[in-house]
Image (cartoon, rainbow, N blue to C red; front, side):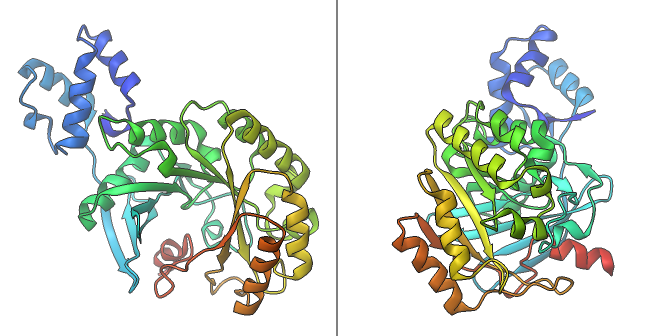
Length: 341
């Protein structure tokens, strides 16, 4: 039995036509699932009973179990969910002046091995199915009683290492009949799976792309991001340039500032040289320290100096406002702590 939350509109239309139903039933079904938020197919009132019985035979309406919920003084909430097979994942709700955003997880664990990241301390067990990613948005919205307007695919795991399920997820939450989250309000982050960046450039939704760069040269990036040994910075920048030219969209460059490792004036100038001429936006991120890791957050004055250098050299840049600093804010930290117990 398949989860109804894992079906895109096109998949539902095929299912319905294969069983002799009219394609418009897909529209009705999506509205019942996402607008009326039904918990049982029996709640549907404009479809025949034999058809509803067929739906009940073929589909399930799943839920996520909330194991714990941490609440920050700034409004950020981190949820630890248990999947149907017992595995644990994290999802984060953030409050902004423009609305609420949810950061979703795409894998149980992660194999990318970024040295500063808590997610990689637990190796990947499996990919999440599309419905398990959709359910994170739905469940957080329900538990927090908020309308989610933005989604970032930056939780545990590498989204492009689970490409097909992530693409289905994007189509489902973007559907105007369903959750109706605008494509430009959705951002997918990758640490640099180059061939998938080229593939993503052909994707027909205007969903944003973010690159977890975190270093301006191969020597530094090799130390903290093993993926760079497979896809060096030169190849990554070439793929970013192709994506920008193909889509005419700006790319966000994520850069976590680590004390003494990638936060000097020299690093800032190297980053400016690397990104010169590209339509990018640099997001400088204060590091959420992880007890098991040796890395420290950059000093405030060094963050400001780094920011000023980029600004003076005409790089679009912001220093991200810290959120969730008083809870297990680092990605994967809450899950790892719970599993270690």
